[in-house]
Image 1 (cartoon, one colour):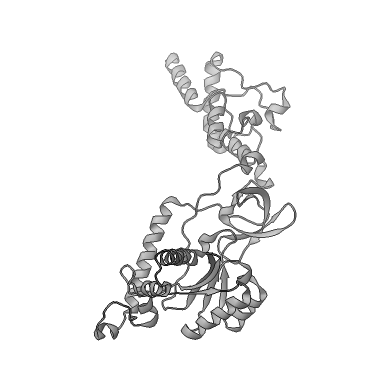
Image 2 (cartoon, one colour; image 1 turned 60 degrees about the horizontal axis):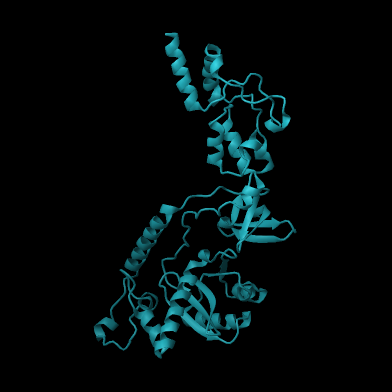
Length: 378
């Protein structure tokens, strides 16, 4: 019977309404929901998981302690950026190649100029995931954190900075202006409610083409005020983001899931959680192990979740309903039709057939008929 209810691959709520319209058995909602969730075809074409509540990077209370880096291409030229999480100060440089050796040389230049950070956040590109780059970070005692593959949002700081720098490049190339002047102005522009990135990082204003007094050049910077304002902005951003977000079901080793990867979908098994937050190691049908973000995974019911009780064994929550139903049937048997033939094994999908099933209508109809029967008795 469950198979017939789900015929046509309707969703959970539609299947429930379709079943309740003409029949009832104890635990109907749970049975229908379980059957739809374990349908392989429905799982393969299900919507991708909704976004989870915003998980923000921890920002230190001092500049140049946590950095993000990325590589981008524009006009057939490669650029590498390095941005500070606290001050938003950005370093950008055009490079001839994007191999690990080139990126390491760029990092050494910046570290020797501003100091060695505590943590570096990057994606999983070849230049950042090579053994040579990892060895460099170990020698310089920098903790390396990578974002989930195919999920740039987890490295949002560098991704957003790349967009900003690309826009500056486009405008400067179109107008013929000097890109480095534009970069200087960007670094020297105060952020909303805060000092400029250059002020927060270096503790002083930078001289630009705009006139500036000696007093302003020597003015001290209140770093605590900048930190408090930064925390307020992050709190507001999270509050707005979380309005349309919800937590997703926790995945455990051995769970079955559908991997949504670049528009393609395939069944995978959860191997274990990764070290990075909301990231999991999964294995596909060919035995390959991949690391993916939780939002790439659509949960399927495990085999242990598919075991269901017999249809004739009512749960405690349905005991009262079953008792009232039996009384109504006894008082007015002609008002009720049989649920289904107990001769067919296929219809019951392995359930124990119910002899003289107690009800054939939805709960709303049942209660109306029961009230009518009680009035007739009175």
